[in-house]
Length: 426
Length: 162
Ligand code: B12
Image 1: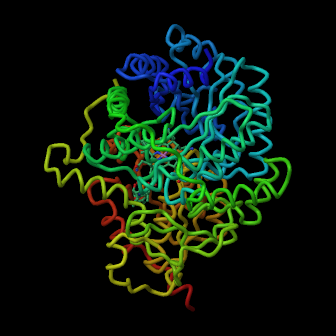
Image 2 (image 1 turned 90 degrees about the vertical axis):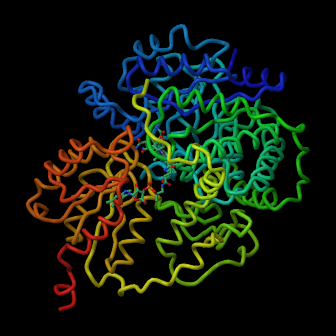
C-alpha cells in the first residue's frame, strides 16, 4: 500500500495519522525508534530525519562521525551503505507502516539516490522551502535540483509520495497566508513534475482561529489547483521557539492535534517535551505520539469557512501573482522572489527581498507590518520607523513559548517545572 | 513589531552610534542552517555599538577566514544550535587559529552545541583548549556572561576614529 493510500484509508475510518520528527545516526537506535513508533498506541507513520551534514552534502564529515562513534542530529542516509539502511528497515517498514524521509536540502540528488538504493520513495521538501531556510544555495539552483530529484524519484519508486515543507518556511513569524500560498505552489510544482501523490503542509502559528482559517484556505486552494492528483493536508505542531515546561509543551501539542482534528487534516507531525532543548529520546517521541492520538476529536470538523476570509484572499492573491510570472511553476517561483511577490520575514537568504515584516496583534494573530512588494493591498497598519531592538525581536519569538509556559505555571502542577533531561536516548 | 506587552513597555535602550566600536563577525558552523539565533545576536551586538557582519547560515570555514581578512573584526562570534557545534567548533577554531592574522582575535562560541542538552565540562574545556576564548552554554546565565565578555574586549574605537 502506498503512503498516500495509507493516509486515505485512515481518513475514511476517521483516524488522524500521527508522525514523529525522529532521526538517530546509529542504525540500531534508528531501528529501535521506528519499532517504537510503529508499536505506539496511535496510528503512525515512521520517520527518518536526516542529519545536518547530509543535508548540506558534507558526507565526508558524516562518515567520519560514524567512524569515530560521534552521534549526529539525524540519520546519515548517504554515508550509511544502502544495505545498512535496508537491513535497518527490514521487517519494520511495511504496508501497514510507511516510512518517510525528512531532510531539508536544496541539493538533494544524492539523498534521492540513496533513498532509491534503499527502496524508499516517500519524502518531503520543495524548491523554496528546502532552500531559503536551509542554507546558501541560490533559489534557481534549488529549483533545477528539485526538478531533477522529482525525475529520479518517479523513475526509481513505484508510487512515490512528496510532501511540501512550504507550510513551515522559517518555522515562525511568517503570516499564515504566505505559508498557505507557498505550500500550495510547491504542491503545484510537484504536480507539474509528474508527481501524483502529494501532501500539503501547514505549521501551527500563534492563534488557533487564524490557524483553522489557514488550513481551510489551504484546502480550498488545493481543491482548485490539484484536481487530478491524490493529496492530503499535514499539520505540523509549532515549529518555532517551543515552550520550556512539560505542561506548556504538551499544551501546544494538544492545540496542534485540535487544529488537525477540527479542520479534517489527515496527518499530524508532533513535537516532544524536549523540543526547546535537544534531540528527543525515543520514549519522548512515543509519549508525544500517544498524547496527540489521545486528544479527543470533539465536535465534527467545522465546515470550511467561506472563501472570503483574509487568509484565503491573501494566499489567493499571492498564488495568482506568482502563476502570472511564468507557465512553469519553478521559473515562476524564482521570478516571484526576485520581484518580492513572495518575501519571507526575517529570512536572510540573498534571494529573499527581505522587505516584508510581520507582527503579532494583541489577540495573537500573525499579520503583516510591512508588505514590501507583496501583491497585497496595504500593510497591517503597524509599519514602524526605526529598527527593531533585540528585546522586541525576542518577545515576538517567545510569544507562543511564554503563553503556553505561563498557562502551565498557572495550573501549579509539577508539569509547570522546567522539563529535565531524563538520561539516555533509549 | 509585536503586540506582546513586554515589547511596548520596555524602556528605549540608549544606543551608542552604530559601529563606533569596530566590527564583529557573527557566524555559524558549516552544517548549521539556523539563522534566528544569528539575527538575534546581530541586533544585540549592534546595540552594544558594533558594526555587525552577519554571514548567515551554513558558513564554510574558508568563507569565514576570507571575511575575517576583509573586515579585520574586533571579535568573531560563532553561534550554533543544531547539535553539531561542538564537533565543528573544534575544527573551525583550529582553522582560524592556524591563520597568521587570526591567532589573537577574540573568538567565542555559544548556543546548543551538542545533541544531549547542555554541554559537559569536558566539552567546554575541549573547545577552550582548541582555541576559543570563551564558550557560552545556553543555560546558567550565558547571555549575561556574554555581555560581560564583550565589555572586556579591546575596542576598535580609538583606531577607527583617528
Ligand atoms: C526554528 C527552528 C528551526 C527552523 C530554522 C529556520 C532558520 N533558518 O533559522 C527549521 C525548521 C528550518 C529548523 C531546521 C532544523 N533544526 Co531546528 N529548531 C528550530 C527551533 C524550533 C527554534 C530555534 C529558534 O528560532 N531560536 C531562536 C533563537 C533566538 O534562539 P536560540 O537559537 O535558542 O539561541 C539562543 C541561545 O541558544 C543563545 N545563543 C545561541 N548562539 C549563541 C552564541 C553565543 C556566543 C551566545 C552568547 C549565545 C548564543 O542565544 C539565543 C537567545 O537566547 C529549535 C527548538 C527550540 N528552541 O524551540 C529547533 C532546534 C534548534 N533544531 C534542531 C535541529 C536538529 C534541526 C535540524 C537538523 C532538523 C532535525 N534533525 O531535527 C534542521 C537544521 C538543518 C541544518 N542544516 O542545520 C534541534 C537541535 C538539537 C540539539 N542541539 O540538540 C532543535 C533544538 C530542536 C530539537 N529539539 O530537536 N529548525
